[in-house]
Image 1 (spheres, one colour):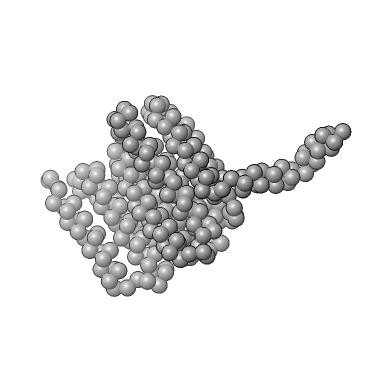
Image 2 (image 1 turned 45 degrees about the vertical axis):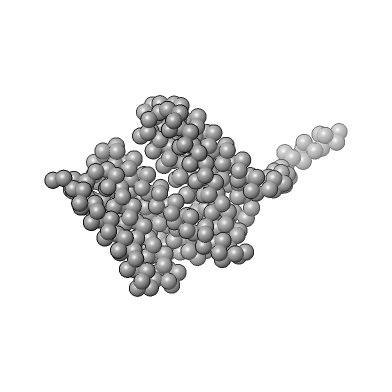
Length: 282
């Protein structure tokens, strides 16, 4: 009889089930959860590499995105609500999807699969640590936040470079390529600009700055489409432009945009463009 009452209580009071699930997840230390989630995601990605990309990519893109979101959510778990439900998981999901598509350009053999998965697991583990710091660790240590911000910044640059190489390798119409990359860079810009202040809501200025950044880079990609550049050089210029522009915007929002900072970012961009021009073969 007692079992019947317990069953009815769970049916009519589902919050009891939720509370039990929360206690179960919280019972596992967060660092252990992050390690477990990294192992699960690496295993899922490893299984995806055994299937033909041409015939299964549309299924695995969805599967990997869902699993990446759910597992990273369980890894962080506590105190996630509102805007954080999206912003904390943009980079883990993008990182998984970009590397999955990038693997399709590599030779399918164990010699490439093992190093690829090893690098992925390290990168994904770092992504989860950054998301966790952005979620609850900021108040505890400013140095911890700065380290997470730097790792997130570098990770975004890597993801942009990988996605640019992949999209350019498909040799789509230049306008479609520019549109897709502009959309990706709008999302990444919004994420990193949000991490500057970590507000509960996405402010209007963040959307405006993200739109300006993506528009500038969209125009740059359209312009570069008329220049005979190798794919890797093209991707390098776009990535460097993103790195420089978003770096100056984040410093501007954080009231740290000094003349020396502007000169450093512009110097990097000009240096890469000069090197790229030297590779031209008209």
